Length: 133
Image 1 (cartoon, rainbow, N blue to C red):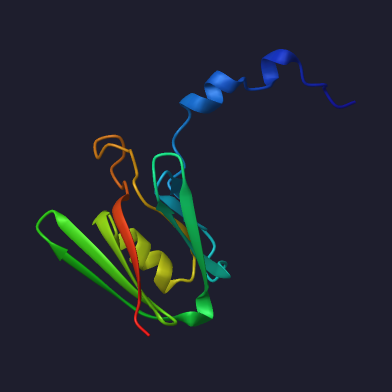
Image 2 (cartoon, rainbow, N blue to C red):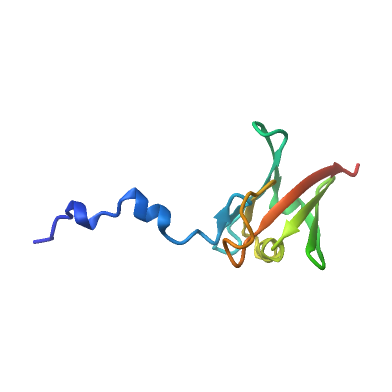
């Protein structure tokens, strides 16, 4: 006969909050751990402290990306249809790797995570979208 779970067997909310942070998502956005799993790339720009604007691009519209790192500054440029997307921050190589495998789902501007909180932290300082046509 199977044992019924008692209250001591169920994790409470405080133990769930203290557990390890999810390396695939955070205030900066989300990477799906399964390659070729993302259908679209969603970009979220903070218009103000209380408003956010989202842009969505099907993966088939992503033409190319270029990652550049100089000292402590990183920049990722993505061509998506008629738009040029520029992401500035730190730890952006993880976003490039996720783009290469088709697993990057969401990028959110203005992460409040401190660099010391996680070794592989992604920090998106700014996100700009320019119409090229």
